[in-house]
Image (cartoon, rainbow, N blue to C red; front, side, top):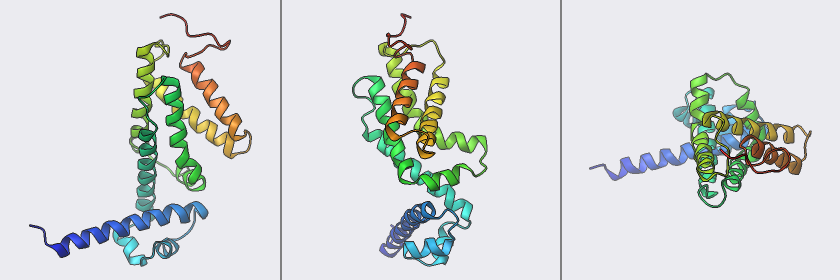
Length: 204
């Protein structure tokens, strides 16, 4: 049986790790070049505690990305992906995921500029891609979306378009409403939910 002191130590370690990740997201979003000392101060722990959880800055950044990905996935699940028309559900998922991006735009731009292997990038996007794929597949099964294009390609295109809309908005080339409208229009066309003239998809 695990002793009470041991359980308390593990609980304290979990709390301090969470505090460090929360502080790192806030501090690095304000200043991507901030040092571990600033993160430790914001988390209310010592620098040694930060190093105990994350021996390197790279490991801390990876953990922050994982944490933000978990938040985005939880928001997507809360957006009821199985409810209503597939097109509406897909747009709800993307908006829910984008909420995390809007909270930490500077941090995520910094992280996205760091070199990462193709497998690590794939693993990072898999939880998001899986949920998008489920909705796109549902739309194809119900006839809301065309099924002439490969499913994997549609999922990838959806993610890329969502990133592009976010980048255009952040760069000031599109307003928030314009970026949302461009994303919606582009997605519906690619998915075959409507052709360029607003007609429904051709029969399969």
